[in-house]
Length: 224
Ligand SMILES: *Cc1c(COP(=O)(O)O)cnc(C)c1O
Image 1: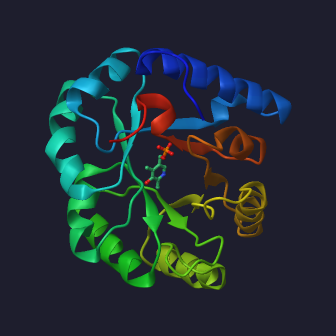
Image 2: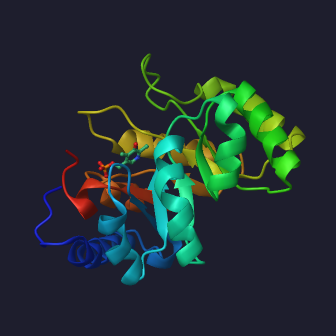
């Protein structure tokens, strides 16, 4: 997606109207779609203007980077909601629970166990999405579709609230069938949240039921 507006605040307005248009086509309420502004690699100076214009939901993919910039911004702005969208090592589970408000990358049993313990230790229970390797790609993160029932059972035992499913469809191919499959899997398991859709395909994702879209480039410009 080529952004035409000059700065992130203008692009935010454009994206919101594209979201509304996509929701309308699908006869959905755009208020049921959360825009996660993916701020990885962006500086505090780039992020602050977006907060000032009302964007409060952000996504980061690395614990280290998020720990370096978000505690001070969270201290300044009480209503920030920070989402972890990148892979998480089990030995960083405690730090993730401390720093983030939602985790989208629950992708294996050992991580469910580690997060369950971290949440109990801290008395802080944050919702998680299970990331599904929707295209069954060798190099991609996410659990296999077949492993989903086991993951859900384990999360229940660990008292982790599952908000829904997340996916990154294979690159370079039409994403719609993968979004539709994720929606189908979620419905089959009685889950309502769908974290799917990025800069290049968020409108398609919204039409197919996305509740959380993760937008970096279309908002901030190309990452360097
Ligand atoms: C970087 C990233 C995004 C945002 O991608 P853009 O194409 O820049 O919008 C979304 N989801 C995940 C998991 C990411 O790592």
